[in-house]
Every structure is written in structure tokens, then in C-alpha cells.
Image (cartoon, rainbow, N blue to C red):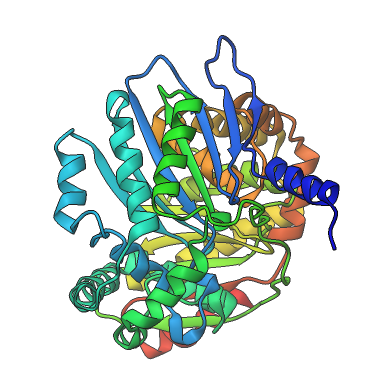
Length: 459
């Protein structure tokens, strides 16, 4: 039999676990830019960034689920569910949800990525309690009715068709498949016509219950906000929905390393009657936790991040072979991508690919001059700050940081990390990343002879 003292100890231990824990992660000057985190009993994390000088606030909820969490049969379920959470709860209809934010001039939306999903609303600071109540209600009280699933299926199929009609967008999905093959990271976030048609309300409900537990969620709020008030309002909303059931639950950790991607020399071509050919030439990049990502960011900026970048100058300015040409990086938990995109006339495809491949090979072997690296560092620092000038961008930064890294970094620290990148750092990451054999994805009306030569670009 358990003694009274043992029972009292167990009870006091349980009560201790049930206390919300609040930490100041970044201390701003005079409260400006201060980032705080509170972890509620039940494992829900709430992070805020205070910016008293604005009159707006952006409230978002990030879910630790993306398309890479889907089985082949469930491809598209995460995005489908994102749509359905706007269709109504036990307290609100779809019209009630949209009308509530429209009535105060607010903006509301969501997006699904390969490793996370985010729902958000941007409002006047005085209307933040409404935004919190509506978004929390959507995330905790969705009813996912059969009729809503059937109606929204049509909208999602139209979204897939819209993407298919934009080859400049579609080629990036093709490149993911070229690099990752038939696994979750290689499949489209939207799903396919077949998988979307096969999804049922019951399967989506099970997916919802599995992945929208509070331990899998991060609440992020930025703007003219009071952290304590946001915590109280969020806690009230989740408790009202009965969502914080287990006081001892702890948040899920950021995704860890799962595998290393190594692909080379693959070519995929989709023939389509378009005016341009759309190409992505690229290779494996770096995981988002790799410390070399700062140097890769500088390299990416110098190669294809602006009008003074090498690729823009060589392909567009000097030769006029493309209107749009750029490079980009994508970092996931365990791997990444580096890609070069260009849209050009089909007759110019091989000229464009040769120039891009020659530039990548040259930089891999010889590196970049110091002056190009210095210019890229300045450009990256400036664009980083300019990209964080609104409350929506701030909410994205702190929400994604908490979900993907489990920590926060101030803007000053980010700028310092970029500034600390040396020319040798950039040259080393160029050798490692650009020195790999690339793969290629192309969408466009290439003739058989042209298509047969695509492998030359990755040889």
C-alpha cells in the first residue's frame, strides 16, 4: 500500500510538471525584439516577439507535419487537411471563419511544406484576441465532414491543374522527384490526381488526430503583443477544446537525421507544348542544421541571387538567353538541394545548360574572388533584414525556428554569422557541393535529338 507521504510526493511532482514554463530567449532593448517561450502543461509551445512600434500582430500555429510524413497512399493528405481546417468547426461554419477576419480587415491563410504546415492570421493589434480564438478553434475543433471533403476535393484538383499549367513552378516538383525518387521528399506536396481522389474523410480524420496533438504544435505570435496575454488566451482556447489532456506531455523534438541523399547524373524530361523550356540543374545541398549553411547562403547569393550574380550576368545580361535565371537552396532535416533554374526558348536549352554547368564547375574548382564574396555577404545581410520588416515575416522566423531547430537566434546574431563567413569557407563549400555530379529536370517541347543530348549536361 502506498503511504500518504508517497502519495503527496507523487501529487506534488505531478503539479510541478503541470506548471507552465516561461523563458526569455532573446532580450531586446527596451523590450523591442524580445522573444519569449512558454511551454504549457500538455506540451504546447508558445513563442512571441514583441515589437511595440507597430499596430499589427500576426498569429500563427505551426504543425510538425508535412508531405514527407505521408505514405504513398496518403500523398497529399497534409495539404488536403490544411484546406479542410478552414471548412468549419463545432463552433463556426466556413463562412463564420472567413467573415470573422474579414470584418476586422484581417488576412488569413495557410501553407503546407514538406516538413511542416502553418496556419496564420494578420490583424490590428486590438483584434489579436479574435485571431487567436479563430485560429485555435480551427486547429482544435475541426469536424472534417464528409460533404466538405467531397467539395474541397474539387478545389484541390483545380489547384493541381493550376500548378500543372505553370511549368516554371512544376519543374521544381519534377526536380525534387529527379533527386529523391519515389519517396516522401520526392513526391509533390499537393499530391496527385489519383491520390487526392482516393483520400477519404475517415483517413484524413485519422491523420488529423495523429499529427495535430499539442505536442506537435508551436504557436508563434509577433507584433505589438503582450506575451502573458497571448499565453492566457491560447491556453483558454486549447483548454476549452479539451486539447491539453496530458499535463506531463512534452513537445516533440525537431526532426533528426534520417538518411543522406546521394544522387548523380539523373535526367528527367517532360515534353509539353510550352513557349519556353524550363530547366533545373542541381545537386545535393546541405541539411538545415549544417553549420556550413551560412557559407552556402553566401555562395548561392554570389552565383544566382541577384542582378550582379554570375549566372544572371552570364546568361541574361551578356547573352540574352533567358529572362529568368537564378539559383536556390533548400535545406531539410537530413539533406538538402542546390539548384539553378532558367527559362529559355527550346532552341537555346543546350547553350543555357552549358553556361550554367561551366560556371558551376569553374567555381567548384577555382572558387570565387574575394570581392564577389564580400558583395554577396553584404547583399545577404541586407536582404535578411529587409525580409523581416513585417510581423508576418517575424512570426515565420520564430515559429519555424522553434519547430525546426528548437532554439531562437536574434537578427543581430544572424547578421554576425553571415559576416563571419570567410572566403575560404565559401570556397570549401563550393568544392563540396558544386563538385558533385549534377542531375537535371526539364519541362518543354524539345525535339527527340535535343532531348537525347540532355545527358551531356550532367556527364
